[in-house]
Image (cartoon, rainbow, N blue to C red; front, side, top):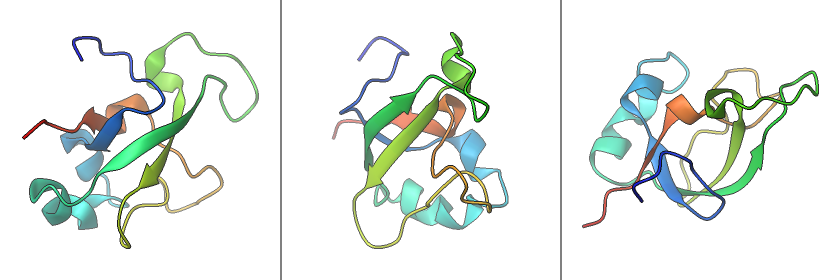
Length: 94
């Protein structure tokens, strides 16, 4: 996985940057323990207004999380149950 371009099917967890946000900080222990893992199911390259973005940081990533407790969205407002690239990191292989 040398590329920084995430693809559908990649296994991810929350990044350190995401865990600094108020809406996601409650998942810190699960991420550190390796308990919060998800798979990218969709990548939307448009913003909420329908404009196309070339920048990976503006794409919205939809995640199917494994387990019962997981974040729905990067925001308290779940209008878009998605995450930005900076919110995610690849799961490390054991």
